[in-house]
Length: 369
Ligand code: T4K
Image (tube, rainbow, N blue to C red; front, side, top):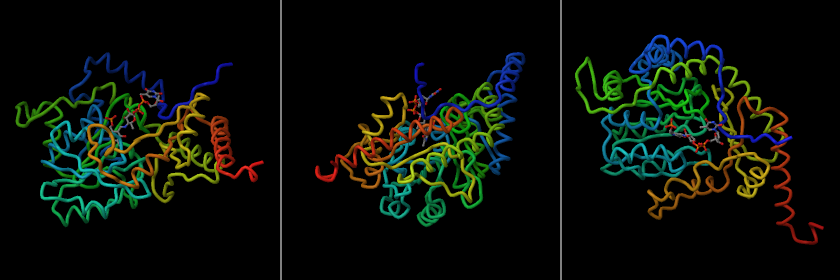
């Protein structure tokens, strides 16, 4: 029997019949996009869940970040972590902003102490990223931003369903942006959402998402960042299964930890809400481990390698040691509803085998024999 390929980012599918019913309803109604009933329901649902005044659904988080930067009046330089998805930086560059890369801490999120050193007279905003769904140092970033009169926003692409100090991610800074891409914890095939408590920012963002239209007139610059009704139906359906997805992800995460006791994991604060969507390890000989997994049809991923300051469009010779260390040793393992104990055992056995082989290779010959 062929071995099943295991993927990082395999989509979690919610209640299929409910989704199909909604899709039929959309087809029957002939209302497919442009602020339809499913988008409006979704926006209300998210605003209530996250506890923010405004939620604006968008077609994806990349464009959502662009819209929110424009709506917040951000100009020139934006401080961002170097260890994040290329989307974080490209979203800025695409609209003429300059990402300024700052190193992260051992906890994978932007180092607030290094933010201060990166501020120039051209800096207008800080864009924190809640990497792997773990909140970045929100209170320290808030402090720096207030002190230097900067706007501060959060790329919350990974962090739907997560909390910081008991408050849901989505309500911090001037605004936050979620992703509902297929590989995310909650998915809408593609999709995203801007959340904010700033009424004026929300009004501008809402117009900008729809070509700048407000009350039937074009009052702003704008783009087409609208979410379709089909995506909204998928996100709604996915949200309804959220507690199931969390339970599976959490179970998988603890199973991995149990089976790999000597390995460093990205940890989650169990006193907060977490989505456990990413199982991330830091491991020596990462590429050897990844190759061994790939050879067995397990598509573990080394996300965010080699660090944004080292990818071609942004490479200026900067050195950011912690980003580089993490980019060299981080590996993301499959989880989600497609994975259970037997798959985890299969993966952990391979990882342990490579770790043992590496230990043998690094021993003097007399000790290894
Ligand atoms: N900010 C951050 C911090 C982000 O991580 C991202 C996106 C964004 C902003 C922007 O959000 P969006 O504009 O996308 O809403 C994925 C996603 O495309 C991207 O959303 C995500 N972050 C990024 C980190 O990862 P890849 O390169 O992993 O995609 P791909 O095609 O290699 O798929 C990964 C695995 O998932 C594969 O092994 C197969 C599996 N898969 C994927 C898809 C799309 C499936 O099984 N089914 C599917 O439909 O980019």
